[in-house]
Image (cartoon, rainbow, N blue to C red; front, side):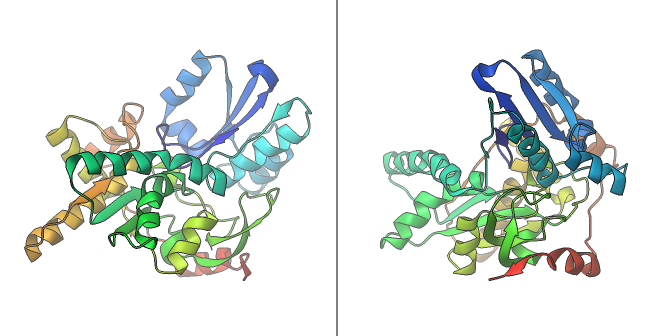
Length: 320
């Protein structure tokens, strides 16, 4: 099983689980492994073995370490390692936790419940916002509202928020690409930065994925949703404001949605508009205190991606 994207864990994990839960190997992206030690500890509390990815335990991992022994890893590499482990044991099973269509549709229980809640409040959102790593979080909240709009309902702006340091929707290309670094998965039609793309070590580990789901990508291509890319300093500032006003410390991934909500609210206020904004607070930041500590001490920085690096990485995406 794999869990990726901006969910409750808000980090980057790939699992290879034996039948009946007798054993569980977790390949945790090196960046998150180092930044979020207590996520590792809680999994170990329940008996899992957690390894930093790339690891020396798989051929995929060893190949990546030969290229760069200091790499922070990526979601794509962690997925490749978990798949490699799973295919070598007939009792081990693997299920992707984001990106694929059935996962996104499963997550739409979130948006369906939100619609029912708005019915009780006799209201409806003008804007729906969620962070996007692989796509399950964003799709889970927004797809039911987009579906209502396509069936003749109220027009809604659905905004996917990604980090500026991993901007597949805003700076990537639409084409066929692999969902993992080694190319074990089928080719998927999606916006991608190339399956070899190595994002910087931002603290929102669940958003460090090179591609977006096929369904989210197609909706963006058809101009039915929007995408924005935000820098992490603005997002952490938004997270601290949210904590001070609401008493909840958000995960770094959730901060991306909050930052965009603040932008929307300011714009509405400046224009004198009444704007109902719905967003998904997809996780708490209690396991991310080292990130907040670094931000408060001024140790975090924004990342700018060189066009030449992006061009080289995107070249691996096959045109549609």
